[in-house]
Image 1 (cartoon, helix red, strand yellow):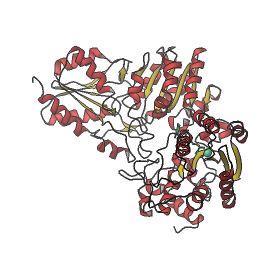
Image 2 (cartoon, each protein chain N blue to C red):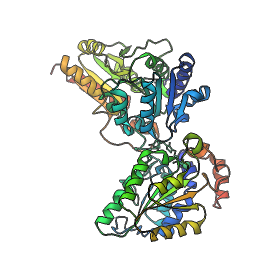
Image 3 (cartoon, protein in one colour):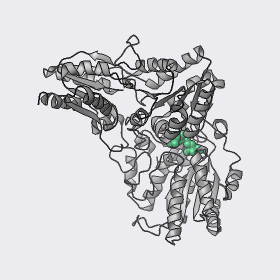
Length: 253
Length: 315
Ligand SMILES: Cc1ncc(C[n+]2csc(CCOP(=O)(O)OP(=O)(O)O)c2C)c(N)n1
Ligand SMILES: [Mg+2]
């Protein structure tokens, strides 16, 4: 997709691929044929630059044809470089400016409580995104209002644009921070399907507080030259790299 | 007309390194975009005077204020949408109000951000910055002017905003062209209409002037690289002579250069006016050239606007 677009964010998409797949194909209670179904679980991609993996999951789920995916980032396309709620079926929230998704998720969760609905809200954040102050304002609010219908993921791939998170702006001790803010914390290997599903199941059982799942991942997972690479944060592969990458992922080149 | 293209961001990086050498009081902040904004050039040379603030623009601006309060001259950079909108209140309360020496130099302004789409484009930043007291607002036309603008803001007391693009801009000035904050430059003299451009729209205005010449219209072109304080004297002396004006900006047409010019003309010497800019709508993903066409930032649009303004003369 990013190859066809000539730009985009493959690295941070691949680190989230297993989690996004688990959510769309196993966890979420949703009806792709009826995107506005009021009892659906909601997913907010706070880390909006992971749009490619998000669109792939929405297409495979049936929100729109898979053939749309090659139009990523093209003029007039429903698939904007960052998610746009008004353009793409299945997109709950327009994102791209980091740090804002958890607040919106909280609002959706408060509305669900008001309306006595028991759908769940999943918010997908980056680890560099943890540097944004609004995340912690939202973390405080979610705990204060006991939003146990909120589950937040943190894609702990240890990289942001300018380098490793711990060199640019350390976010550790991350689990302790969330605990301190009153959240139930689960740490998993974000590429282990069993652990992802178990964590989502456990989060559903927690009452009276929100849950954060800190998922240890590898940026660019599955494509050797992209793994742990800063260069492939916001750069598309060239044709040769594309063929090799697809082969490594077990797809037809 | 085809002109050589050059990067404003590269010139920012180059100027910043020279400033760092000459001025030990200069410190630079960025918010996890230093390779894009090119503050990384400074960071490599002067690691002790560079502070990456992470993805936390509001915090970056507050930190910049504190450094300035202690006598430092601070450059703070990010993408324009985040350096102005995300932290507007921090800039207003902690930088503009106390008149601190913080120079906000932001890249990726306007719609030519391209594929990232509306969340990363900004057509509001000139408005956000020019509405703030004490703030100087500069939109360099091209790469050479960027270098000069960055050099100039260091010596200008108080907060400044410098707006840069992502893509390479057509080069319309030279290393020797004069640049002074608050002064518009006459790029081409003319009699029938004044085309006032800012940023890369100066190049578009020059193209339009060329097309207008073939249609028998003599257009004057002003490079309004300082939006605030606006060069009223130069603007009025030109428009009083030509009797018609077109403004052109890669910004929301309702709230940027066009409205700044309209206020001056309206209060002093109204003439028929047409405004070229991004319509009052969010942008979208696409190639930057495609977006320039779709959102009406072309020389054809400037030509049409000029003809419309000229037709209304004397009515
Ligand atoms: C408020 C804001 N500031 C800056 C950016 C530019 N930006 C896009 S992605 C990114 C790095 C994100 O790091 P992380 O959250 O770790 O996600 P990953 O790169 O690992 O996918 C930055 C700084 C942005 N999108 N939003
Ligand atoms: Mg990361």
